[in-house]
Figure (tube, helix red, strand yellow):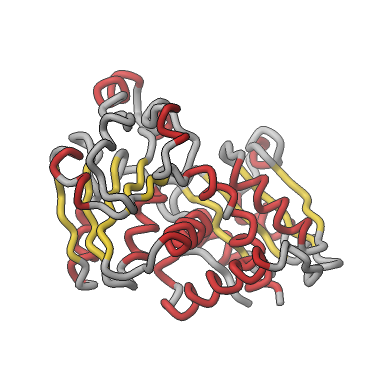
Length: 298
């Protein structure tokens, strides 16, 4: 049985194979019915629009069906049932489980108790491998995944997408630049692991210091829901905002990415600029998740 829990557990050959399969699926116009008769449970115990809907769309395009839980309140967890028991029961109904959960490590726990493959659709501040694969896919649509400078801007402490993307990029020859408000810097353990993996990771105090060197600028929102109180959030909210003026002297080939939703950190006036790739990035979620669903069930 094959789970996809962390991008760290995928070899670069696995990543490239999934990206190649996603490209083939997209090029052929999603004409594929490889999972007819398969049933997948989407267990989303944390709010999500793009991830949940793109997994649902991906399975439908492959001929399968989904059953869903989209909140703790809508499940027996609200009655005191453990996640382990929920997974034991649900895995007896379906052919695979896609899990999103607010607690880091939840997907790993689910994999330990599931009798069917589990895909991690985001666990707290931990990992988000499907987002990372579509991020890589979007970069690769625009440039090779080698010899590039990637800037990570925003909440790098709690931002699981930035964590996952850093580990994935460590498989390639890239330089990573981190730019974060005070208290939201990349966790030291990830910086140490990047060094052990031979990745050149450079920390900056200001986006202006590095933006003209970047091939990719990956922006994330400051996540209100990760803060212990509103005062802590207020101290760092609105620390940065990408506007056309900010982008006036960047490289011609720069691509601007964001896992969405955005909450004011990218001016809508940027949407019409050629750098803006975040809506294409979201669109790429369907073929990438189709490739992942085939990977664990075929």
